[in-house]
Image (cartoon, rainbow, N blue to C red; front, side, top):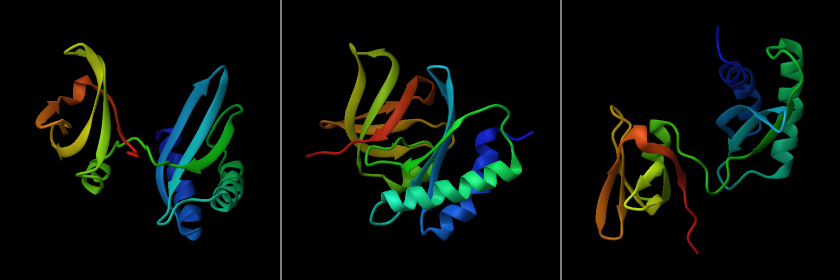
Length: 153
């Protein structure tokens, strides 16, 4: 049986493409006792509220028809954001050389966060290499809680 996120991605992808957007991620999470189904989208030039509204209406109808989720939940459609999380190998390839923030599960040299430039991603192991200052640091996948883009001003 497929996960709710996978089923939602399959249902939503055509509606998202019709709006000229791409699917970035689907999350199904429980927060403060409420389930949220979040669809994160991207578009060249940026996502606007009209994109989110149109996709939300279409996907809501598709989900009502297919009814893949038992119980109640809140559907949210939004932009992946400028500081989006990188999760898939294609995400890392697309943003190679970009500023990122790596968050670790445990302290390393007294800290859990490292800001730098994405230097490498090992698809086989999932290890991430970031240039921090003048040094390259490689973080094993098992130690990495999150890698996200970082906006510099």
